[in-house]
Image (cartoon, rainbow, N blue to C red; front, top):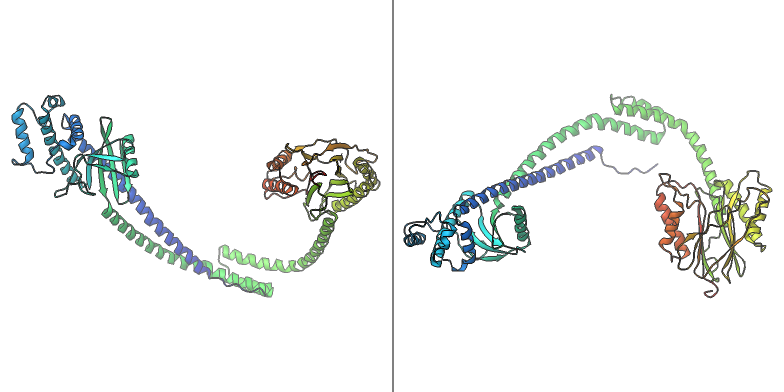
Length: 593
């Protein structure tokens, strides 16, 4: 009896799936809320920052001479004496400056002075006016910062590559420290070096008018305002979102917990219903299937399964199991007979495969003492036995005979015809005949007793090892492929004769080919170019030549491997309908030998 494997309960597995579903849904809920909240905050922050930027621009442009002021502040930052963040009383320094400037120029309206008027003033009074308006503007910006709850509000001057910021003005909260240290409120003229993220943000603001960048718990906003002497002026803001994001995270966690609790309750209800109406009847069917497996008693399980009749797919399943058990009983005896017959056939086919393989040269290198050439060949039958065959042998010390053949048909008949053809070809070749005479005599011998009218295509060549002269003849076989030194592989379109076994009395003709040292000859059967993929496309000789020329310096073993890899990559999972037989010889000549 087959050993029982320990398996978990299906209700437990379903419960685990539900638990995983609840967990995944909870995580998705949490991160979705976090992402949506973050996007909402970013959109609202950008809109709010844009409104603040517009308010700052209006505060600046209220002064008719604002462009002149920006230029003056930028070019005279070190010389100005500014009262930052002061309260405007009659005793304040700025009020005193206003009285002094009004005494000197009673017709000058300080709030509405134009650039032309200011340019007519003496340098000392221009400086005085610039200090007064700067103090007024800082006070207004402080009010905007406090009203809008901005952590940092400032205006900077920069230029490509945007790696520095020249602070034109910065708003401050009451009691804030103005200085040049980090997180202090920078005074006019202070220059800081910024990192890559700030550089990209300012560049984007210059190109797109405004830009909001997320820097962890902070959000930086830049808006393009104007230009001074070719330098870009940007209004900037920084928001500290630490408290807001902590609140968002806490809210997301609370919502996620409530969602998970609701899903757990629904899951428990679903699991109870699944157990009552699905798993319990399935358990009864399973127990009876195991009972039949152990006893093969279809009558017992028929009686038991009659009690399992819910009006759904499980009831239909119990009926199907009953019918299946009855059919299995009737098939068992026939299966035993079929199995015995199949085993006998498999044994015979295995023996036939071994016999056929032993008929072909299969030890490589076949002639280790012969240095004039390297040769390698393979045959992969489409079935257990095939009709393709190759052969090579030394007729004498100076002549190597090579044969590549393809018998019509497949399976055992083709294999038997193949062995007869191979023996006849080999016997005639070893008598010292030319390839053409061998094919002629073999054809006559086969035609004399061929009631099944089978035939075989044959290419035969005899290589004279001392000179490299190849004498060959072709009886309806595929064109050979030749690679001369320094040239690519190419088809040798030799003259074909009729197939062996097609008609008695046919005379075949020899042709000669001179092989230089380094020349390679590739022989194959039609199973290579006619290999078919799932879309019924042929591999073809073009792809075969491409595979050969992909590694032109490969040795014969590698040549056959490369072609087989290309065929397999082309065919993929499509069934092989024809034998694949290949041979490659590389001629070295006597000098290497």
